[in-house]
Length: 249
Image 1 (cartoon, rainbow, N blue to C red):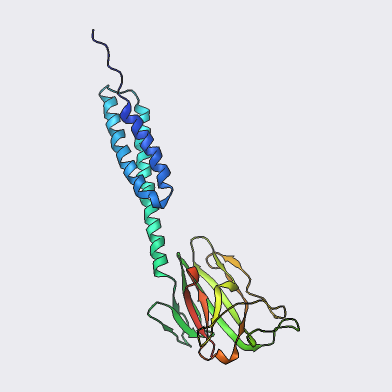
Image 2 (image 1 turned 90 degrees about the horizontal axis):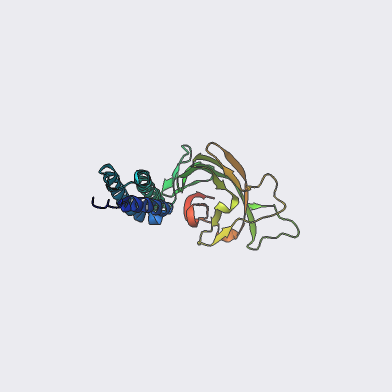
């Protein structure tokens, strides 16, 4: 009697290894394409290994089945990761955008999709990465008396404005704070928000908001009164890119 040939279990083992490697690669969107290649190869080897078991040429049925399952998961997760990655890249490429929500004080939307409206006009802001909110900047005072004897504006005056923000769409929560705003003078000079102790009323402190939640408060800028003609308050989107503007005069 000829000696019995040893079981040919290599395909099932290779399928299991490739499935595991594919799942690890699928966890990172940048290597999702490698996960798909590993998954497809592992799936083919696993099916071939199962066929060997049925013919009696191999004995590792469970190993080959595990390889098939893991390889299929690697393909699915790899594809999903790449779709989410390219969607995020597309959102970043588009940048923030906005539309004017008010009817009584209509604004305009420029070629970049950024809305500009008069103070007191709600603007629907797309801040990027699927975050959307309705924001209104109002009650602008270009010469507010909010400083103290120890706090004098470096540029000549303090400008205050009231902000109302409501999140209308987000995958989890969206952070809104005074740091999201800046004032752009008529000559292009930029002022960031500043802190003064004499401010009356609630400040616009940082808050993480879910859909339907809102926050409000005051923001303060150190401004040059001689450069306020044509000045605008800007809301920032991703990377500090403009998402919306409100004119102050």
